[in-house]
Amino acid sequence: IGYDYGRTIGAFQPTLGVSATDAGALWTGFGAKWTSQDIFPGPVFVETSLMPGLYLAGDGPDIGGLLQFRSALGIGYAFDNGATLTMSYDHRSNADIRTENPGLETISIRYAFALR
Figure 1 (cartoon, rainbow, N blue to C red):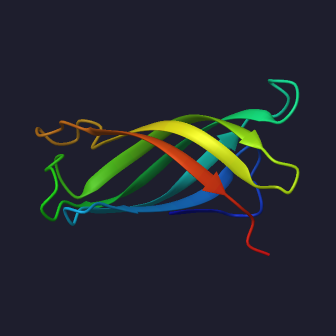
Figure 2: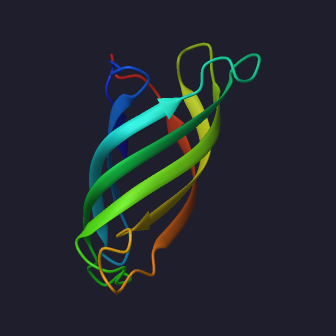
């Protein structure tokens, strides 16, 4: 689950994310997202984000501690009503601040819509 704030700071948009697994792992983070403007003609866009956050492994994988950084890259389509459909890849790791750092990768499809 994610929430993108309705304003930007320069080219970046504040964003918040939360994810959970069936094994009880939980991650939550806050950071910044950049979305392309006019790279492709029409409604196709590229986005990237970086969010530092906290990870609780539960019965999920130990990826090297509480502090984890999530970086993501996606390509999406913006509908006329403001909704978007995005396919993205993200990587979570502790950026080698700890010895244990296997990381975790996710490929996802996300549908987003404005809360108004």
